[in-house]
Length: 260
Ligand code: MN
Image 1 (tube, protein in one colour):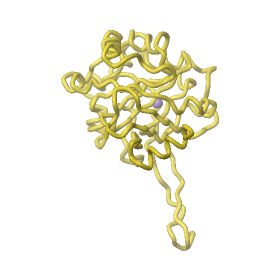
Image 2 (cartoon, protein in one colour; image 1 turned 45 degrees about the vertical axis):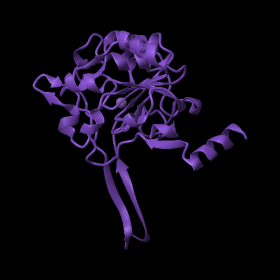
Image 3 (cartoon, protein in one colour; image 1 turned 180 degrees about the vertical axis):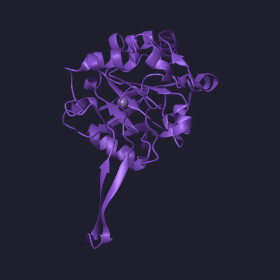
């Protein structure tokens, strides 16, 4: 059997399953709120063109308006000034959109401390147990934050001192970008940086270092609890927006059967 015939047979038998890691995209989808001096992204909106009515008797369709960085979405390298001369979302090679994923579960730590910061030594301890991060793959950080995604308020978790959500430490972001074998970092939260990262040095270090290294981000993932620590294959499919800095994406994982 050829490799693809083996894959389709495994999918037909259920020994390989497809898990949807994508949040529903609607006007209720939580969105990032930057400090108020900065420009803000738009919520997702549908505008009906016709619905089997006199505007189009046999068809239903919509226009939509959205930020590129709304809901489950892909961050391209040119999203950040450090990657401004690197790929836009349309230029990311298709071969990099299908890749292995490691899932690191720090949901207990994030439940205890919403400002939890992932450290390099925690990744190395995880590698000691589960093996090295995948070459050319993704590190997906599970924090349990997907359980909050029905509420903008709970999802951003902001108070008078700003948002409180988990993410990588400055040194961890630098290590992921410059030393680790992964091409991307994926999270369940509204952005790949921690909520407090506007006050870090540098500001938003995950964006700064990862995009500066030509690497990618994925945000607002869900169902990471259904993935094994190693062995899933991630399919991340952003729209091919010319000059785009990112795009809402359908993100799927292929997992071997006993995991779900
Ligand atoms: Mn983004």
